[in-house]
View 1 (tube, rainbow, N blue to C red):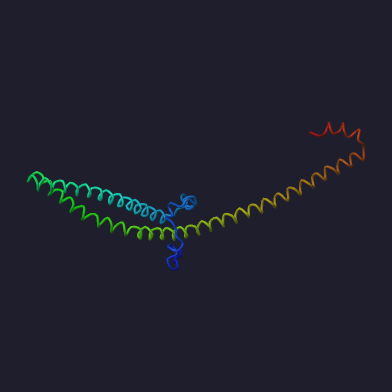
View 2 (spheres, one colour):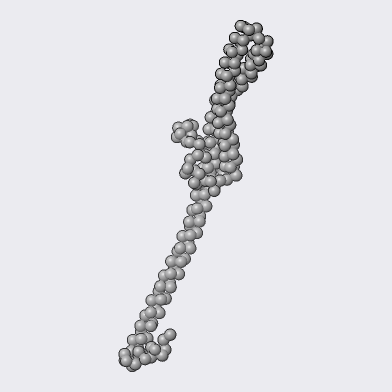
Length: 198
Protein backbone atom coordinates (compact mmCIF):
# COMPACT_ATOMS: atom_id res chain seq x y z
CA UNK A 1 0.00 0.00 0.00
CA UNK A 2 1.12 3.58 -0.67
CA UNK A 3 2.86 5.72 1.96
CA UNK A 4 0.96 8.61 3.47
CA UNK A 5 2.49 12.09 3.71
CA UNK A 6 0.78 14.86 5.66
CA UNK A 7 1.13 18.51 4.78
CA UNK A 8 2.80 20.88 7.29
CA UNK A 9 2.28 19.15 10.62
CA UNK A 10 -1.41 18.33 10.10
CA UNK A 11 -1.42 16.31 13.33
CA UNK A 12 -0.51 19.36 15.42
CA UNK A 13 -2.80 21.68 13.44
CA UNK A 14 -5.80 19.38 13.77
CA UNK A 15 -5.02 18.69 17.44
CA UNK A 16 -5.27 14.95 16.84
CA UNK A 17 -5.51 13.21 20.24
CA UNK A 18 -3.79 9.96 21.22
CA UNK A 19 -5.81 7.61 19.00
CA UNK A 20 -5.84 4.64 21.38
CA UNK A 21 -7.90 6.78 23.81
CA UNK A 22 -10.45 8.00 21.25
CA UNK A 23 -13.76 6.08 21.74
CA UNK A 24 -14.63 6.20 18.03
CA UNK A 25 -11.19 4.82 17.08
CA UNK A 26 -11.55 2.05 19.69
CA UNK A 27 -15.02 1.16 18.35
CA UNK A 28 -13.88 1.08 14.71
CA UNK A 29 -10.46 -0.53 15.05
CA UNK A 30 -10.22 -2.59 18.26
CA UNK A 31 -11.28 -5.69 16.27
CA UNK A 32 -9.88 -4.50 12.93
CA UNK A 33 -6.21 -3.74 13.62
CA UNK A 34 -3.44 -4.66 11.19
CA UNK A 35 -0.21 -6.19 12.52
CA UNK A 36 1.68 -2.96 11.92
CA UNK A 37 -0.99 -1.03 13.84
CA UNK A 38 -0.65 -3.43 16.78
CA UNK A 39 3.15 -2.94 16.88
CA UNK A 40 2.75 0.84 16.99
CA UNK A 41 0.00 0.57 19.63
CA UNK A 42 2.30 -1.56 21.83
CA UNK A 43 5.12 0.99 21.45
CA UNK A 44 2.74 3.88 22.14
CA UNK A 45 1.42 2.19 25.29
CA UNK A 46 5.01 1.60 26.49
CA UNK A 47 5.90 5.27 25.91
CA UNK A 48 2.79 6.55 27.68
CA UNK A 49 3.45 4.20 30.62
CA UNK A 50 7.08 5.40 30.71
CA UNK A 51 5.93 9.03 30.71
CA UNK A 52 3.70 8.36 33.75
CA UNK A 53 6.52 6.42 35.40
CA UNK A 54 8.99 9.28 34.84
CA UNK A 55 6.56 11.85 36.23
CA UNK A 56 5.96 9.66 39.28
CA UNK A 57 9.72 9.03 39.75
CA UNK A 58 10.41 12.76 39.47
CA UNK A 59 7.74 13.57 42.09
CA UNK A 60 9.21 10.91 44.40
CA UNK A 61 12.75 12.22 43.85
CA UNK A 62 11.63 15.75 44.75
CA UNK A 63 9.95 14.46 47.93
CA UNK A 64 13.00 12.36 48.87
CA UNK A 65 15.34 15.28 48.10
CA UNK A 66 13.34 17.54 50.40
CA UNK A 67 13.49 14.92 53.20
CA UNK A 68 17.24 14.38 52.74
CA UNK A 69 17.87 18.16 52.70
CA UNK A 70 15.96 18.47 55.98
CA UNK A 71 17.99 15.53 57.33
CA UNK A 72 21.24 17.31 56.31
CA UNK A 73 20.14 20.49 58.13
CA UNK A 74 19.32 18.47 61.23
CA UNK A 75 22.62 16.52 61.06
CA UNK A 76 24.61 19.75 60.47
CA UNK A 77 23.27 21.06 63.75
CA UNK A 78 24.33 17.83 65.53
CA UNK A 79 27.82 17.96 63.98
CA UNK A 80 28.40 21.69 64.55
CA UNK A 81 26.95 21.92 68.06
CA UNK A 82 27.68 18.46 69.51
CA UNK A 83 30.63 17.31 67.34
CA UNK A 84 28.63 14.06 66.87
CA UNK A 85 30.70 11.56 64.80
CA UNK A 86 27.70 9.26 64.13
CA UNK A 87 25.92 12.29 62.68
CA UNK A 88 29.00 12.97 60.52
CA UNK A 89 28.79 9.46 59.04
CA UNK A 90 25.03 9.89 58.43
CA UNK A 91 25.78 13.30 56.87
CA UNK A 92 28.16 11.71 54.33
CA UNK A 93 25.49 9.12 53.44
CA UNK A 94 22.91 11.90 53.02
CA UNK A 95 25.31 13.90 50.81
CA UNK A 96 25.90 10.81 48.60
CA UNK A 97 22.12 10.38 48.39
CA UNK A 98 21.69 14.04 47.33
CA UNK A 99 24.43 13.67 44.69
CA UNK A 100 22.66 10.56 43.32
CA UNK A 101 19.28 12.34 43.32
CA UNK A 102 20.80 15.42 41.63
CA UNK A 103 22.26 13.09 38.99
CA UNK A 104 18.91 11.33 38.36
CA UNK A 105 16.58 14.36 38.34
CA UNK A 106 18.01 16.05 35.17
CA UNK A 107 17.86 12.72 33.34
CA UNK A 108 14.21 12.29 34.28
CA UNK A 109 13.42 15.89 33.32
CA UNK A 110 15.16 15.43 29.96
CA UNK A 111 13.31 12.17 29.33
CA UNK A 112 10.00 13.81 30.29
CA UNK A 113 10.72 16.67 27.88
CA UNK A 114 11.52 14.24 25.00
CA UNK A 115 8.71 11.72 25.54
CA UNK A 116 5.80 13.88 24.25
CA UNK A 117 7.62 14.34 20.92
CA UNK A 118 8.26 10.57 20.60
CA UNK A 119 4.66 9.80 21.64
CA UNK A 120 3.41 12.27 19.02
CA UNK A 121 5.60 10.61 16.35
CA UNK A 122 4.19 7.18 17.24
CA UNK A 123 0.65 8.58 17.26
CA UNK A 124 1.26 10.06 13.80
CA UNK A 125 2.54 6.68 12.59
CA UNK A 126 -0.57 5.04 14.06
CA UNK A 127 -2.75 7.62 12.31
CA UNK A 128 -1.10 6.77 8.97
CA UNK A 129 -1.53 3.02 9.54
CA UNK A 130 -5.12 3.63 10.68
CA UNK A 131 -5.87 5.53 7.46
CA UNK A 132 -4.38 2.69 5.37
CA UNK A 133 -6.43 0.13 7.32
CA UNK A 134 -9.56 2.29 7.03
CA UNK A 135 -9.23 2.34 3.24
CA UNK A 136 -8.71 -1.44 3.19
CA UNK A 137 -11.87 -1.85 5.27
CA UNK A 138 -13.76 0.65 3.06
CA UNK A 139 -12.79 -1.31 -0.07
CA UNK A 140 -13.68 -4.65 1.55
CA UNK A 141 -17.03 -3.26 2.74
CA UNK A 142 -17.79 -1.74 -0.68
CA UNK A 143 -17.11 -5.11 -2.36
CA UNK A 144 -19.23 -6.87 0.25
CA UNK A 145 -22.00 -4.32 -0.21
CA UNK A 146 -21.91 -4.82 -3.99
CA UNK A 147 -22.14 -8.60 -3.53
CA UNK A 148 -25.11 -8.10 -1.19
CA UNK A 149 -26.74 -5.81 -3.77
CA UNK A 150 -26.26 -8.46 -6.47
CA UNK A 151 -27.93 -11.03 -4.20
CA UNK A 152 -30.74 -8.58 -3.42
CA UNK A 153 -31.26 -8.04 -7.16
CA UNK A 154 -31.36 -11.80 -7.77
CA UNK A 155 -33.84 -12.28 -4.90
CA UNK A 156 -35.99 -9.39 -6.23
CA UNK A 157 -35.96 -10.99 -9.68
CA UNK A 158 -36.93 -14.40 -8.21
CA UNK A 159 -39.58 -12.73 -6.07
CA UNK A 160 -41.04 -10.91 -9.09
CA UNK A 161 -41.13 -14.19 -11.02
CA UNK A 162 -42.77 -15.98 -8.06
CA UNK A 163 -45.36 -13.22 -7.69
CA UNK A 164 -46.14 -13.43 -11.41
CA UNK A 165 -46.41 -17.24 -11.20
CA UNK A 166 -48.70 -16.96 -8.15
CA UNK A 167 -50.93 -14.43 -9.93
CA UNK A 168 -51.10 -16.71 -13.02
CA UNK A 169 -52.07 -19.69 -10.86
CA UNK A 170 -54.74 -17.74 -8.98
CA UNK A 171 -56.09 -16.54 -12.31
CA UNK A 172 -56.17 -20.15 -13.57
CA UNK A 173 -58.02 -21.22 -10.38
CA UNK A 174 -60.61 -18.46 -10.94
CA UNK A 175 -61.07 -19.36 -14.62
CA UNK A 176 -61.47 -23.07 -13.81
CA UNK A 177 -64.00 -22.27 -11.07
CA UNK A 178 -65.87 -19.95 -13.41
CA UNK A 179 -65.99 -22.68 -16.07
CA UNK A 180 -67.30 -25.36 -13.64
CA UNK A 181 -69.73 -22.86 -12.08
CA UNK A 182 -71.01 -21.92 -15.52
CA UNK A 183 -71.50 -25.55 -16.46
CA UNK A 184 -73.17 -26.99 -13.34
CA UNK A 185 -74.24 -24.07 -11.11
CA UNK A 186 -73.53 -22.99 -7.55
CA UNK A 187 -75.48 -25.77 -5.73
CA UNK A 188 -73.50 -28.61 -7.31
CA UNK A 189 -70.15 -26.86 -6.94
CA UNK A 190 -70.34 -26.88 -3.10
CA UNK A 191 -70.67 -30.69 -2.91
CA UNK A 192 -67.89 -31.12 -5.51
CA UNK A 193 -65.59 -28.82 -3.49
CA UNK A 194 -66.10 -31.08 -0.50
CA UNK A 195 -65.23 -34.16 -2.53
CA UNK A 196 -62.27 -32.86 -4.56
CA UNK A 197 -60.58 -30.07 -2.57
CA UNK A 198 -58.15 -30.99 0.23
